[in-house]
Length: 279
Image 1 (cartoon, one colour):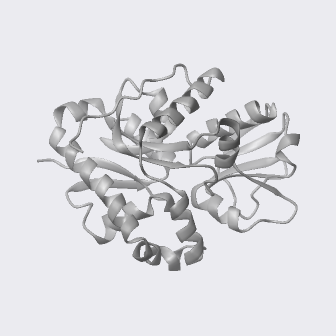
Image 2 (tube, rainbow, N blue to C red):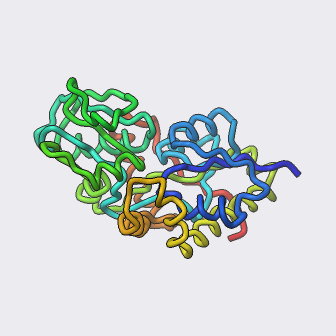
């Protein structure tokens, strides 16, 4: 039997699963590619992966080709700590300013555009760049959107003279809902022809998150010497991030898709189709 090609996000928001893969054998029998979301997004859309977490907007743009894996997503209810807008002026003063978007994500770009337009009436000019963390906002821009570990670092290390906004909380203020940042998607052809491998992936991912969260202390200690965060900061962050995908999560995701569609960020609102697995 061949191995399933599985993507894995190499951010701290997937640390429990990383721990289970690296220390507890949950990755055995799987061909795992670890990368930032944009790389995984591109890999699965171009058939280099069978199953992968992706920026949640990617499913909306490719739903005819993919199914969503049940019971697993990356979400937060309010503050997320790892999607941060750093600005030279208050958010309510942003209009047609130049905003730099991280090259590492796709969902966060859409989320920021929705929040700034619907909550603040702003229509900035957006540019995607690789961000220099030594100069977060370039001279020619007003604000920068950070995600992942870069955003988490900025969230804990504010620079004087800048304004910091958690875009998860901005979404919560706008809609009253949690935000689903990533989902695990499955190539429909793979799901149809390799039900046994899909079941293995589902079991390893869902049980891997549960196992790694149960052993959160060991998981944090595994990376503590390699990351610019304290144990307490990482412990708090792993309480903010949630990995379930309930009906409530699905409703929140559909609201995001509806707003993205209103702003022409996607061409239709997809139906959320879950893959069939034994749960």
